[in-house]
Image 1 (spheres, each protein chain N blue to C red):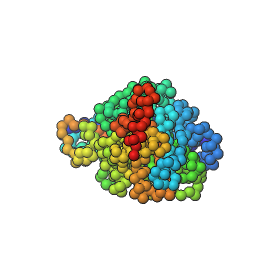
Image 2: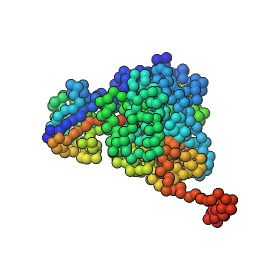
Image 3: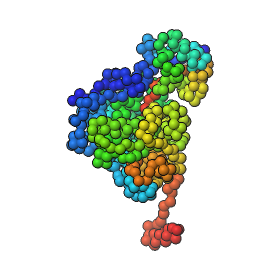
Image 4: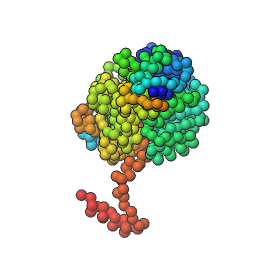
Length: 91
Length: 415
């Protein structure tokens, strides 16, 4: 399942400056593994030591927060867009 | 006086130079301004603060500004009001209202954060400022950008109250109404901020911006005569204000300005239709579950609050609590504050008053302890919320006899 992954600025040092990456995976979990294969070190930036998504990272599939879907088990289809976005303040 | 050490990750402690960045590259934790408190101790005193201007800038030494203040010279130092009528109504001994509904220039506490962020944007040499907003921030960024002669891009949910749209457009920003919730606007802005070199006050300028909220806390303490109240009830949207009021108390303690005082319990107020932080508090969990907002309190309608985790921790650490308010209770809260104290607050203020009332009635806040209620926005911006409730008025022809009849009718209706 090729999907487009948008990489936020803080992670681009690992992706050679690329803001958009093609990755493969049927779920968010497997896309994270594929990102790690392509760019070693990326996984530990996204997941904490228990394997959970870090508290201040939000992941969206086609603009939808994965916590409203099946979190890391959310399934993906060809051409889906996955955005990795740091939590930001507001009001 | 060298007072700043750059930025520091709130989670993992990594240091970063002072720059327009907001996220730790390693753990994605939020970056915070790192002060050299040792250099400030003895320099910042009650006297030095009292000698400052009657604005938030009397606390400039505790704000992340290196040079001169560029915009918003008159922001802050709003009234702290002894609310005796409200206290009577609530059956309490000592109630205070910190009234930022009259904050200059755009009538909300957001002027505090924006004055810092826009001054900082000019320090860093930006010519464009931007924000994602539920309304009050939009008003304030547009106003301060006008004053600073900066270009501004303001992103709002398309269903925002008309009052807040007009109170933004008047300053001639580029206003972008996005079909979506605030959380969707915010996510979009995060991606825009990555692409365009703008000073997004709540994104890449968040470490500086959020510090401005401390001044609200400093003022409460100073205006109480350098005394800490037993309880502070704070409306929560993104969750930043409650953490920064708490930080303000801690800083004043650290600097020896309020030594040996009892602790203040911090209480979070949210709408039932968008209360993920209060839900964390009630369930006693540090895991935030985002929600899709459905409330008349649009200025608090953030379903995925960035500082939710820290807001929860502040209530926990301080021994405080949290309470939800229904839309009906929000309106009642607005009317209660208006009826008792003559203060017209927006829906967010209704949330805070309603939550305070419920916490008092539940016995969580004892009636004989000092209570500060945080009012952060102005009711004239959200009149729609009251439209259906306030239609009772008398229409007459311009004659004395018509008035006499109307008055007699009114008196006969009054029980």
